[in-house]
Structure formats: C-alpha cells, structure tokens
Image 1: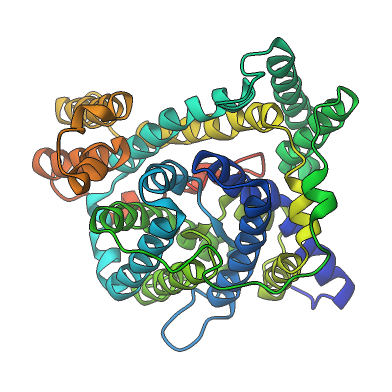
Image 2 (image 1 turned 180 degrees about the horizontal axis):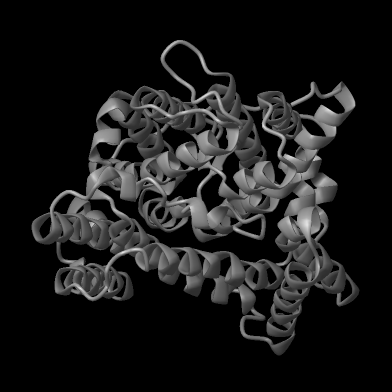
Length: 446
C-alpha cells in the first residue's frame, strides 16, 4: 500500500477515535454513577479513560522487546468489565477496583505465554455463553438509566422513557439507512440527537461542562491509594482472562487482514502488552483494556493497515485526556439518552454471543447441558446475589457474581463433558464482530 501523507494519516486516525469514542466513554459514564462518583469525578474518570486508551494502544501497536502485537489494534476499556467493576466498586469503592485492575494486569502479563495454551478450554460455546450472561446482566442497567436513573426524583417519568425511545429509534434509523463511517458511529450520533432533543426539553445539565477546565495534568491515583482485596483480584483476573481470549481472536483476524501470520509468540506479546496496559491503566485511574472489534471493522472497510494511523489515533486520545472540557461535554448526555443507547450496545453482546454459541453442535447433549447449567447458574446468581449474604465478604464477592460463577461452571463442565477443543476452531471468536456497524466496544468481542 502506498505511503500515507500526514494529513490523511491524521484524518484516518481521527476517524478511528470517532468510531471508538462512544463506546470508550460509555464505560465510565455507566460505572461512575453506579459506584457513587460525583459529576466532577466522572469527568476526570473519562479523561483518565482516554489517556489509558491512548497509552495502551501505543504499547500494543508500537510494541517493544517482548510485548506488543505490532498490528493496527486500537485498545480501549472493554464493556465486559462494567458489571464486575460496579459489583466491586459498590463494596470496596473505586480504589478497590483499581487495585484489582493493577494486580490482574500483572497476572495476565506474567501468564501471557500460558494463556494462549488455555484457549482450547474456551471454545465458542463457552466464550459465547459467558458473553450472553454479561449481556443479560447489563440490560437492567440500561433500563434503569432509560427510566431516569435510580434515586432520581423523576425515575419512571414518561418523558424519560420517551427520550430513551427517541435515542433508540435514532440509532436504528442511522444504523439501517446509512453506510460506512456514519453507520459505524451511529450510536454516538444517536446520543448527540437525543441530547439535542433533551436540551429543548430542559433536561440537559451543562454545569459539568461549564465548570470543567480547558487543561489539566492527569494525576496518578487521583481517587486515592489503591486497595487490594483478594476476592476483587480473583474477580478481575477471571474477567481479564475472558478479555484475553477475545483479544486472541482479534489478533488472528487482524493478522489475516494485514497478511501477517500470527504465531504463539505474537499472541504472547499481544497479551503481555494487554497486561502491562491494565497495570498502567490502574495507576491512571482506569480499567482493563482489550482490542476494539469495531476498529478492526474499520480497517477492513478502509483497507488501510498502516500502524501509523492507529498510532496517530492513540496520540489523539492522549491529547484529549488533558482537555477536561471534552469529557465535560460528554457528561451533558442525560441518563435516559444514555439508557436508550445502552440497549442496542448491550443487545449487540447478546447478538454476538448467540452467533458464537451457534458455531457449536447444539444437538449434542453435552453441549446442551453445558449451556443450560452454565448460563443457568450465572443468571440465577446474578438475579439473587443476596443469597450469599451470610457468607464471608470475600466469598460473597466471588459467589455472588453471576459472571464469575457462570464462567467457572461453563469452563469446568465443558472440560469434563467435551474435553479440549481443537484450537483452530476457537480462534475465530471475533470474526462475526468485525462488521463496521455498532459493536460499540462490545469486544466480544463496548
């Protein structure tokens, strides 16, 4: 491919940022209110998120000795972390979350060579079922926001639900009637349209944007010194392993797109960069990162595979992190608008999960039993986590987490009933997600 000029590289990099931005900022927007952060803290959480996204992207794309996949892989916080982060943050505050993120990153970096060898135990049947549990678990979060947010005096107000429906319909029209770039950012544009309508209805709070400064220095450990709780670390480590499995699928897909054969050593370097990135992310007040499948879709769409484009995107993200006004603008999005956008975003988790599960032979009793018990246990625990309230706190956080318990059940049952799966089968988890639609960080791979 011919060499790109500086302007084209900048524009293509900016396009990558636009495609991932809605999904990237959605995670702190969802997590922040759920764990009790103020609007000012959420603004900074978004800035920290953008900084970490940029740093981890550069680690992955530029690479170094022993780390980095060195392919055009844009990194950002995965939606898979939302549910466990809220669960941990509600008990141990955000400092407990960040401590768990840092340790889980170290574990992934150390075990990067081993994780690739465990892939046969995470076939599409297992990975898809885990993502299904996560998608179903997140839907109540979307609906609560659509209704106005828990604790809001206007919770359940018809105007809130109307605004959420308007945002949802806007997304459907944009995603269905447009093509290419506009289709890829349809969720972001739907939220913009929803916020504009909310502004006319007097439902937009501009105080966060007005009070946010134009420039700030990013502060490590802004929320305080990280705390380290064993159960939280176990939970985030399991989530990190799930993210790692999905990242391997994207690495292989990118290798195919870029004409590079991905070896076990390449996978090890990619996962090591992911682990190092999570450790750095914890220092800078953010969460675990993974490759964004919608940006892989953009690579396919544009046929531009130069790493310089994604490096540019990473630099843009770092720049935006130092401008809180950008994050303040994002916090103007009313909760009903965010809830309306969350429904399709989380729904894509379900769609992708079903596509992955469909790759398995569902006529086999062993597969049926694995799905039935794995998803059943996960959703049962998610529905009634208080069933473990009489257990010690550490046990509560693990056994009361539907995603974790569902994952453990699925992996163990599949290993017992089906044994190891041919790795060549498991290496295609993410291919259904690389369509340039709205798989907003749903890195199953937003």
